[in-house]
Length: 123
Image (cartoon, one colour):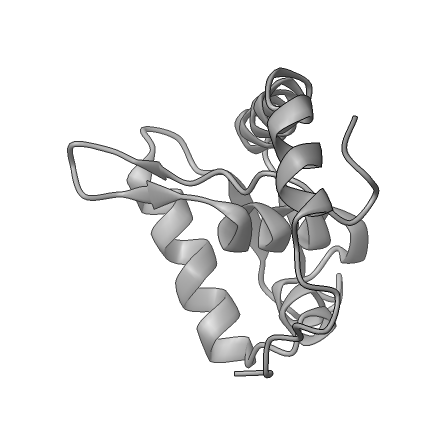
């Protein structure tokens, strides 16, 4: 079994050129948690503009939007996952869990052979 610090990272490249991977999924998850694209982006050190562009791209890559934004005003604005967005997030998380199970032995083997002194520099 893998340890808590080793996991597969999934990214799907579609024939259209669209990509769905950890960045968009994390943003979706944080929009659900924080109720805001701005707050979701800030939680991962991303500018509001970059977070908004990523949310917009994710919405455009599917037939249905995954994130619904509410404009400010008396009601205060914000954002939430659509029911379709909830399904995308849930299916992606299910695929991650399956990948962990399927590749557990190989991931454990790789982790056991990692150089403990190696630390990747921050980008």
